[in-house]
Image (cartoon, rainbow, N blue to C red; front, side):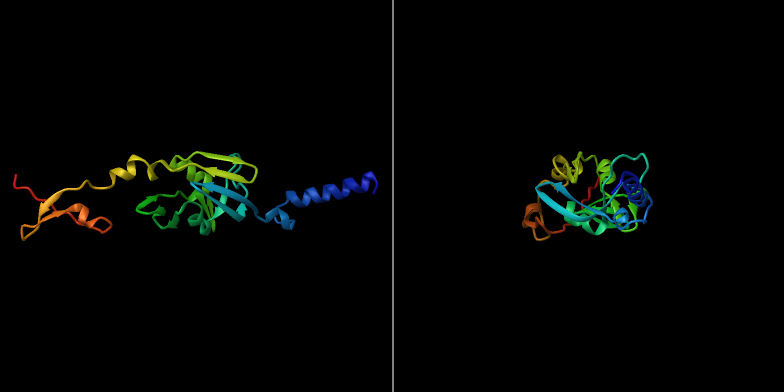
Length: 166
């Protein structure tokens, strides 16, 4: 192949990649590995960054979110256990979810190298915040005078009603 033919062929291939949807590889999602906590999740489809000047972002399918960090998307936001984080519109695009944008919103540390992304723990999901949501044990008499401890109901939903005469 002579130089001129090579340049025409190369330019045609480069042009096809530069035009969205012009080549199968241009619109196809690539694969990556996400590290979160003690797990490693391989994702076969991720979307390249969609925002100009927004930096390098990782867009994943919303359906993959529970496998990655145990969050699920609900109308009230991204929820895990009894915590929901409101999600702005710019973090969602159809079936896609901006995982790095979510990490920034929740205070996670994000490190990426080629096709491997590592996400730190979400501050509100660990540490003293979790401990502060657990009520301390106390004892009170029931209607018959038997002493009942709150710890007797651990793992169950309990409604504690208090009243004071003052």
